[in-house]
Image (cartoon, rainbow, N blue to C red):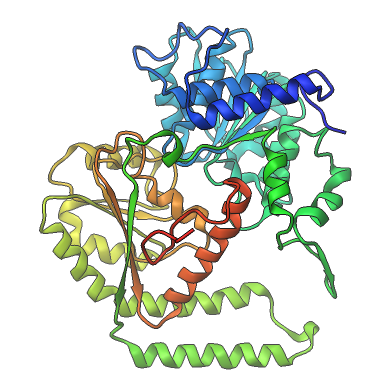
Length: 485
């Protein structure tokens, strides 16, 4: 049965949600009866952000804000905390790299006397803050302490991080959410690959509407569940229009072209680069094809794991990026001869090291080796120092939570596996505060697995768009230009 704040989904409540959705999508200013007198420190929320708060109010503080990256989900989450000063403590769970960002935003926007406590590693100890900020990596260890603290508001930032219900962090998130009356999830990419990734997020928000007992039924309906020799496969997608409609009572999503027309659109282009190790690449590609053919001919019990498959594919990707590296560095050098700054994303340590070796005098980097404090220093330096023209980021470490609007151009030396990660990286520049058109440049090794991956990512993006944006396509493709539809 459906469950809403009053225990049942009345027709009046249904109508209220529909009205709020329509208002939010139009980005009209909403007249609300909650008090935001002590919020903003002189800064004004955008109308669509106020509409997001109205949606949170209409859902009783149990919802998923899935606004596209750069539209201020953090501010909307903080505004709900500000609108309910008697609902304390509030707990914010986020990636480790974003803890300082949340602390900074809370200090900037909240005008209350709330104390802010940023939890660090080590042995759990008594909590004292009105607003507690903790990262996913240590959440499991702190769950008993957090539950005893009786939080009233719980925010999961980048909630796609808990999409895998079998992971320790997801289990910890579910356990903590069970004792909290108001749960708000924030992510611009609620689905990275397939509909099944929504399930754990939905059950956290509303365990009555999405109980464990409904797992199989829901997956059959929306994940094209199929039984094979190894069990059930939930990696598909089905009834996407119906799913998109059902999400409207629990999820609100606005895209930049809907609510922030003053923010320039992204201008995408693919730059195909010939590799200088063609023989090496062709040999590796042939070896991979032969190996895959051998695996196909074996009995299932004799085949190697999917991890081995990925490792061999990853090896081919490394050879491709190695072959395009020299030309890619030349492209970046030519770009930097102009006056504009550039953000470059890559995956492998060797590539990031090569970039820093070539451009270290005018570059900063963020990867897994950079501490949280040093990351903010790197961002600030890139944003304010005219001599620092290049930002080098690891796709995972630097793809979320950072504002890099000093640049209006982003280049990818390597592509991520998912469209969600791709958009997260792109939106480090394409966000509030950006005054110029944003150019996105994909440096693809010609006639290699790079091009295959680009097509795969684009196909995934089409499926995801049907779910979250309620349309067949996001309106663009990796190879530049608008789709006809």
